[in-house]
Image 1: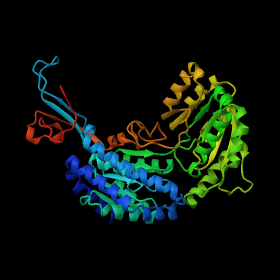
Image 2: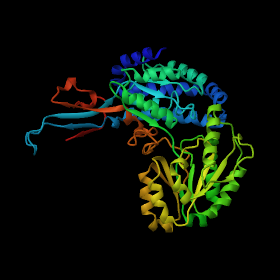
Image 3: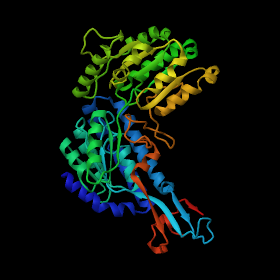
Image 4: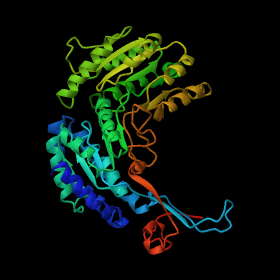
Length: 466
């Protein structure tokens, strides 16, 4: 199917899918989840062949994928996402007679999803972007990632057999096809997970269209973590072990990888010991492997950087650990905060905790920020806490950032350049909000109103009536 055919079919399907009753739309999402579950063995085997992530990790990721489809189905049934507000006519309103006004959120239209490489299920063909767009009432065209083409095609076949209406889903392949689809006038919004270079190039295309569209790009992060002197003194071994495990999880191929750590110098020996004990692991593909080695080399060559854990063979895909003091880091902060997609950590040592707030405030936008501290230190941490929250979308207390729960309160996003839309999330039920737009009806007859705004409320959605 060509991009034009895929988007044109989505345009034709959009009104019917947006108007589908909640029970019907929820059942369709659940059917896709069940179909994926039924094909688990085949899909996991294909994913392992193409991604080298291992069956245990991939089985867990497929479970996450089917879970989030069913979670979004529940949201469709609950209907709160419509945000239905009804202001009845009021001739005595303080600013003058008020007309009957009814506002709700409805689907934006066809959504283009650019699949990610590092999550071949959860951020790919049937992943969170697709599921949240479907739940919002939007048909989806997925641009497959070249890192797992056979899995993408087979996943698309499984979806096609799950009974979705014609035009509600399509798959296109190739960089040119993705750009062509993004430029198609029928696409109303797009979502992307991947590199900053790729995300910004596509965001520029979306913005320069004759009719610009929202482009929701999640582009990675170095996810700063701060260890206070109190935590370093009380839990040095626990912190070193947890950091090494988080940094090397999945060969470091997570957008929430804790690549930047601020810590007292006394932690360095323990951190290095745990990183030396961590084994290397295959990376997703040769492009990502070479990118990791190039980024590691650039960081390792920075002035003031010292190599604590570094292989004798420069092309070894093993964990690496660098350190520099706070002054050196500040002197080269732009280069030192470049994301290295893989198991590399940079530890910035400091003498006074009070010096960190200003440094953290100068960091580029992040997906996450973590603070490891002791309860008795909280009285001195208000300023640092505020700065960490100001530079990231999710702040963690005594936890590491890898692992993003699919739940109602999750925020997976952050200030630029972590994302292009810091007010949104790509994980959790609030992800639907990216693909909805508000419409108000003034003075309309009941039978012409959308179901969420009618007095008889046939879909039984929550209504805020005034």
